[in-house]
Image 1 (tube, rainbow, N blue to C red):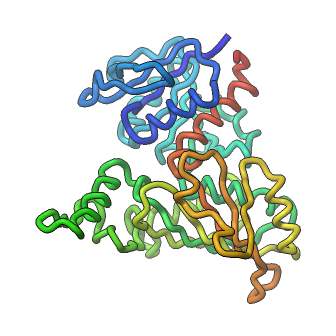
Image 2 (image 1 turned 120 degrees about the horizontal axis):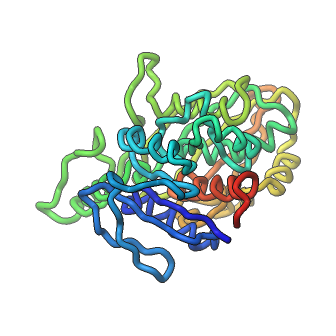
Amino acid sequence: MGYRIVVVGATGNVGREMLNILDEREFPIDELAVLASRRSLGTEVAFGEKTLKTGDLDTFDFTGWDMALFAVGSDATKKYAPVAAKAGCVVIDNSSLYRYDPMVPLIVPEVNPDAVMDYSKKNIIANPNCSTAQMVVALKPLHDRATIKRVVVSTYQSVSGGGKDAMDELWMQTKGMYVPGQERVPEIFTKQIAFNVIPHIDVFMDSGDTKEEWKMVAETKKIVDPKIKVTATCVRVPVFVGHSEAINIEFEDFLDEDEAREILREAPGILVVDKREDGGYVTPIESVGEYATYISRIRQDVTVENGLNLWCVSDNLRKGAALNAVQIAELLGRRVLKKG
């Protein structure tokens, strides 16, 4: 016996990836509905060998459906997620709308699976920000061993985090560098993204941090431990898919780099590729289409007491969004609904 599943925003990058992952992981589905806004109504999407036509989100009745994986923006989520939740369908939301709501659990299954039991407060579960999701997978097993005091992270985030239009802008600007007459001015980004990096993701806050940087701080505290101090600098880079992070960690207790390497090798969701030779590390292009969060460049930071550096790479459309949402659905099925 399987589940009745709804994918909301099925025509977008993350929605399509959710469908791919549901199929790849053989999620037990009895019935699947794919929904989109009216401007995308009737668009066909692939689910394994099947082709499905999207239905109308505005008129859909969520009664009798088990879970809805939302991959739409905060405005649409604000309108439709409470409707689904009230109808008894558990919402797993990829937007930022509910992440900081104390009544809504924010979950990365490898990190805080027990929080899934809090879903019933609003019948909604939040999926974290893409940059946070991969980082906390790496932090949690190390925190359990040596207690993290402070994290300094610099991100190198691909344009797919900004959606299809952002990917198109990188492609067109890159092509325009070589084809006279096809030069493109920035429309999605604040500056040229091709052959450039932009230290600005989301809006600026009064503190001088961007909203993306604030998200990493707030979400790490909610998911892992509110006592951890986090400071982030988030940068958009001319990569289509795959986020990378340089993470500096200060612990309360000493943690040797070799022990850290072994802890991470045994941790769920992580693959360690850490050879001190040319190519002995993972880059974002190698993470595309993969489930794992990859860890490389593990080494002591001798400039602080109990310090460690590492390099963290993951497919942001997967672990940073769609995969994590499907993993939450699997967790909810195992722990609560128990149909599959």
